[in-house]
Amino acid sequence: MQRPYTQADLDALCAWDTPTICNALELVVPARRGHGFTVRPLTAAHPSMPPICGPARVGTIRAAHPSGRSKEADRAARIGWYEYVANTDMPTVVVLQDLDDVPGTGAFWGEVNTNVHKGLKALGCVTNGSIRDLDMVAPGFQLLGVVNPSHAHVHIVDWGRPVSVAGMAVNHDEVVHADRHGAVVIPAEAVKAIPAAIDLLTRKEAVILEMAKRPDFDIGMLRDALAKSDEIH
Image (cartoon, rainbow, N blue to C red; front, side, top):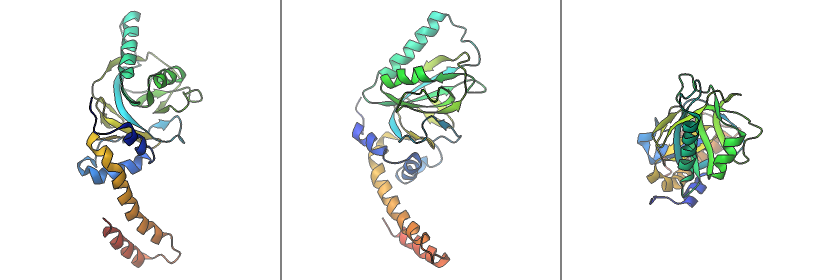
């Protein structure tokens, strides 16, 4: 598949946190200002870990009740999911939707699956389902989810189809950027434009921040700073 970005482009975006990426998208893709990001809080397994960014591998799970399938069918579904995740030409971000009426009853993510998915070139996962084994999560593998202790009846339902996690709709192979703040989908055509947008926004904000930190700062100076910021293009 021909992509309009390279691995180096995605790696470069990991220099900025996810809120900064969202700021840039407001400038580059203004129609996306109100959607395309998580809108409910998720817990990060590694709060201090740098951001992750990669094409999405999407799937669905349930955990509140048994799957109703045979043991063999459950294993086949699990293997099918792993094969789907492994089919990639660059490191990915998994987005896994828990379909239960009360998401998070049982954890798919813990010591075993973080190590397995890391071995399959996944950088981390964003899920509305449960995560656990926080002290044993694979090093360098980020998890954003709901902390809970049990597997319950967790099982793979499907993969490769559109999902929605914490208000963020994601399709297969869409670029996802995530850190402890949450996650955002980056349109493929916007990837290369983000660094320049961040540079512009940083220069515009610098005028205001520099003024605001002065001991003699007042409302008049704020008006001047806002006007100067508007003049930067």
